[in-house]
Length: 455
Image 1 (cartoon, rainbow, N blue to C red):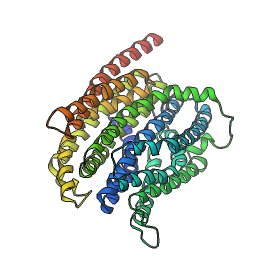
Image 2 (tube, one colour):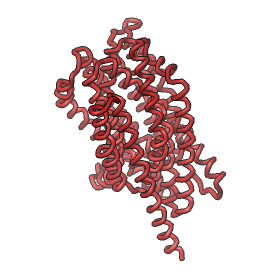
Image 3 (tube, helix red, strand yellow):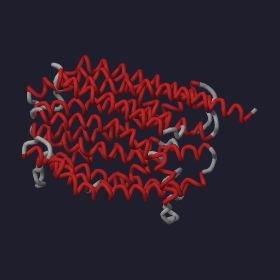
Image 4 (cartoon, one colour):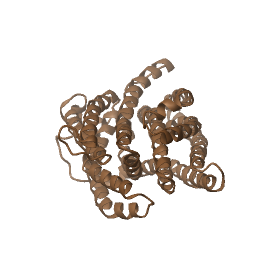
């Protein structure tokens, strides 16, 4: 990144950072998209099993990798402050932490997955698919977590096109092994939805090997010599990363887990409802990649400007990001309204599932705008390393407002399963409003402080 002197320069630099992140995020989600779509072609029970498995895995993955995302503002501020000699130490400690977290997840999974699935109202086949989908996926947890740590380092340098390139390389691998393992082609075992888990694990090992090669051998990453000196584990550095990362991870967990909780609560409905909800959530998640990508780009841009103590520039990037995300949301809402039947048709040929998915997609329109405001603001706040209050706001918005309201509407009104989606929209709106006021307060505080320091 470099210092900019006008809004047009900021727009150009921001889009250079944003577009590769957007393509990367869509690519990563496309793996889950292909898992869902291709499992749906294997049958409604396979789709429902992958839905349940994903709902258990995604909150854990996003929450824990949120901890590793702390490396992005840490490295971005070091670069902005021209302290590049301290980067390799921080990144390597992040890699160590990612390995520890991945081992912890696998150990916990061994003990809790079976009891959780047994406690749900699932058919034997759906439960089998969910369990063995997660077992297959677990083989790729360690490389995925290390990849996330290294990706945070690469993105913090503003070189987001590199992770885009790696992700685009990985997509054909994921689709190929989905095809081979779900449908049992070319002598491979026919595993149904379970095969999607193993296909994802293979893909995670692929992107891990590629990113290690880039960091070690390709400039500008090799300049920082991340793997040239293997420092001893520093628990004090882990504490620094986790002081920023744990609130980030929990904030993301509270948001993502509310969607997972809704899917798990849907298990009280029939298989058609579970499959339809998952298909709609899957596509809504694809659209969410736009505000999420803006959020990640803002963490880099704002972190760089905060490190350089340019409060006005940091504020301008924040405003620019929110406007871009809102424009994305308006386009998404139009697509959902005009083409909801065609979108539902991507997931299934089952007429009952297709019709119900289309109805769920209409409700998805309502939380597009709230996401477009809340996500970018969270990214900007992370650039300031302001994460603790954001954590509290996320907890209240999603779990005190959103989920209870959705549960009440689903049980006590004629909305039924759609009541959960109204609750989701309400929680996201609450988050957007509270986060906006927090950002305004923080920006005024930084502008006043840095004006005093230079006067």
